Length: 433
Image (tube, rainbow, N blue to C red):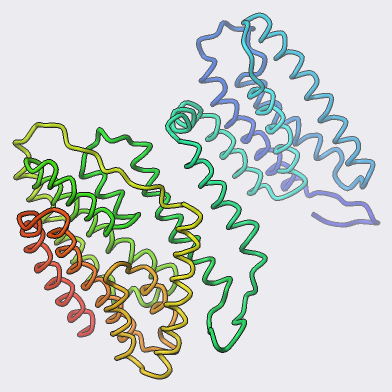
């Protein structure tokens, strides 16, 4: 674009490119609408492939006509948009009367095609194209979205809204600095990490709810490992005691959750401190593979049992009280980690990791990842994280025995021992590089 004598002139080649984007946006939306309406006779569709494609181009042409015209150009574009919407709505109304149906999706799709076509010429064409693809995707996912929504409870929907409130309302209000030297944590950083881990937990919970219990204990263990592998262990152990003929399958699900826990730790470290993942990737991958291998072996042994397995029942992990408790725990651990790193160094970090790892690995993993390599060396931070993972794995055997009995704990023991060996060997190789 160039400016000449206070009048804006768009380069013809650039105008052609932007109009092509506007046409493509309408085409993408039109293809989805046309495919949905492909069974309808010709002439009985208010807005199909051609209409929506031309709508995108029409928006682009109007954008080009009013380009550089200032306030009057904006008014003209708005009037054109209103007239276009009225015409499309009128035809859609006649179509609904004829068919005896209700729905405004086609009208909104046409409005978006026009508006995004204008945005492609007057604004960022890449942003307009992305919005066009997102529009077509939402239209195409209608059945899946409705089916998924039908499976959600009010508590789960409320949890999603709480997550949005935490992200877009609470996060910007928190100070992005250490408030007091007596409690050396950044409130916004703590809240952001809390949102991150809560989102992972909620995603795992929804995976179970949306997929349904018919996929069995293994899927429950895999998805539950994103929520809490410790909770999965307790639940599976209790079900193993109640249904002893399924003991092998429940043990396999517990091992799968342990493997997913290590994947979760790797994801947490990658987000907080990606450079530390170089030292942790190999041991965590080896540990996860060993757990998955033992899970496959245990599931194979249970393969002859065709009885229906009991599904895992998880509490909604996004309960607001639970989220606040986790945030408080994370803040305390981060404050302790900061203090210990200064006063006790690596030995203090290892002790804290061992204690924290009994029930939770995420908070200590995030804390140690934050400290490396400034307050704590990368090697010490990685060692502390692996200590937490190892202690957490050992605690699962104790939980399994207490909740599921000695025989269930014995099934977990060999997998635990092999996992600890894999973690140690992988870390030794990483340090030798």
